[in-house]
Amino acid sequence: MRQRAVVLACGLALAAGFFSLPASAQVLRDNLTLGFIRFMAYHEAGHLLMNQVHGINASTWPKEDIERYADQIAAVLLVPDADDPDGVDEIIGAANGWLNAGAGHTANDPHAPPEERAYNIICFVYGSDPESFSDFKQYIQPDWNCEEQFREMDDQIEYEFVNDTDETGVPIELTYEAASPETQGARQFLQASGILEDLILDIETEFKLDRRTKLVAMSCKGKADEGTFHFDTFQSDDPARNFDQIAICYELVDMWMKAKVDIGQ
Ligand SMILES: [Zn+2]
Image 1 (tube, rainbow, N blue to C red):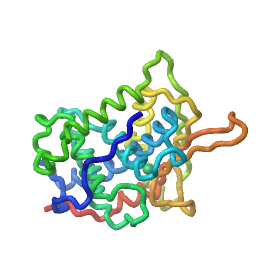
Image 2: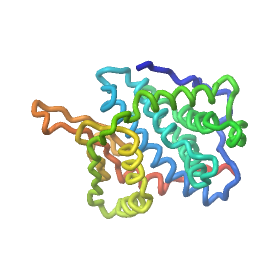
Image 3: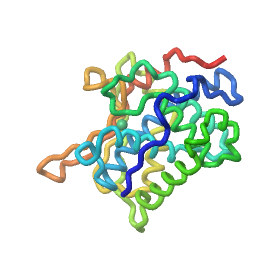
């Protein structure tokens, strides 16, 4: 498959602001957490699809390209219909989450800078339907070619990732592990949101997984990097024991439930 780079430049000519289309501050706050968690979960699903459908992982592609591609897959999967106000509010929430996530990015982080991740989302939403999403135009630079970017990525997913056979793939195994007393609220929030159930439905309906896949909501405290979600592929000499895993960390959910965010006005 062809690989493409994100056209959005770093050092954007725009001041980092807050994407605010008509909505109350409370709606913005709630949707920021939901949207961000959903986007992060779908970013990991992007890694899962890359690995299982095309064998794209850290041993075959540069990490920086993988991370941007996972963002683009997530953005395309989450672009809402213009007449779905909840979906629109949430995807704006996800972009605003990135605008508020600046401090955690270091020079050796393979992910795109947070601001680029925010504008990538807004660009894809706008590009999916410039007429219906004309409110987004104020945040877009014409030379980002958002319509073209969206269409190209949407086509890649449609023709190079979507299941074009009559067979269904290996079902995803979902587990909500026990939470610590501190993250009990995050576990409940995550379960009530239905985000992981939505993700499974979207992936199983559209794509064909060929490996055992575990989606595990868990406490990541004390593990490698508790501040983010993870995709890992487990390989051993015994193929029956191989699987892919997405870890959804209660600590990250908890952090965004409590994060102080700048809601614009
Ligand atoms: Zn990633």
